[in-house]
Each structure stands twice: as C-alpha cells, then as structure tokens.
Length: 207
Image 1 (cartoon, helix red, strand yellow):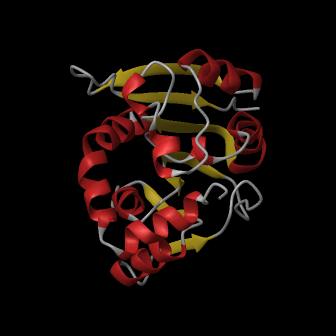
Image 2 (cartoon, rainbow, N blue to C red):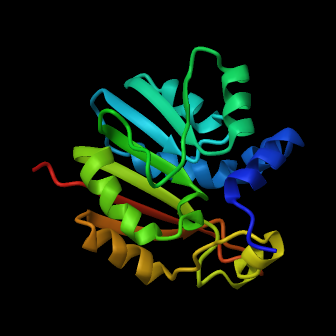
Image 3 (cartoon, rainbow, N blue to C red):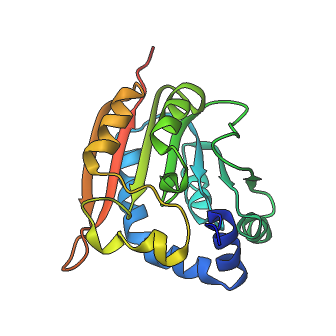
C-alpha cells in the first residue's frame, strides 16, 4: 500500500476536530513566528498563509491594523471548508502545491508545518521567491520535523505520509540559493526531548 497524501490526512483531521488541537499546539510557535515576521514592519501589507488549515493564522494576520488583505491556501478540502464556515467573508483557497500560485505577489508569507510535505520543498523556495513574494517582502517558515529534532523523525512512517527530513543548514542554504537574503534560523520552545520549532525568516531584496 502506497503513501497517503498529506491533504487526505489533514482533511480527516479536520473532520474529526483535530484542527482545533493543532491550533492550540502550534499557537506558541506561531506567536513567535508572527512576532519575527512583523518586527519593524511599518507599512500596509498583504499576506498569505501557506497550509492555512482552518484559517486561524489568516484571521490573526487580517486583524493587524496594517493588513490590507490576508488569504490562506490549503490542499485539504475539509480544512478549507471549515475555514470558510468560521469566516465566510475570508479569502481561503483550496489548491494543491507546488502548482498553484497567487494571482498577485504579497508582502508577507507565513507557513507553519507545511513545506516538508512537498516532494521537493527546496525547489519550491525558488517559486516562493520569484512568484509569491514582492520585492522587499518577508517570509517566515515554521518546521517541527527537521534533522536536529530527533523526536520528529518517525512522523512520516507512523502516519504513512511523505515528509522531507532536512537539516537547519539545508533549509537556510536552500533559502539563500533561492535568492533570499537576511536568512535567520532560531529554535523556539525547546524542552527535554523536544528541540523546539525551527523558525526561519528570510527577505526578498527590494530589486
């Protein structure tokens, strides 16, 4: 029996209410991510959350006083359905990555626990830099499944889902090779038996 798709897995989780637990579990890391994403940002912005789930981060971004528009994209139909149910006026797109891209590039990109489900996540970083993010824009990536966090290594086999297991250096080098600058990586929320969420910020040059 082959691997199941991550979108099928997350649709099942949405149907069973596990999305709410994911929101609670990820909130401390996401708060750290949003703090780094918005630190020093002082002009109106548009934003997108990649792998938005039930849309809770989109709603957080949309509530920021400088936010002109926030949207979310996710390939799991039940997650998008739940996001639209909670926030009927919100902008939630059901689409598969890496093929889909926004009609207009945005100023800020947030993505938590999503990119490593792609077959070629480092290749997708080039697409994010060239097609998703405006010059001068900023991106933050949150990753719990990475080489330096041993307790995450068995997640892929246990869920029967593809997960790319990359090191901190592979993520940061991949961002730089994709053209990003000011790449910074920190581990937040580390405790015994858990290396923390890997939070990486990166910018696109103004031109």
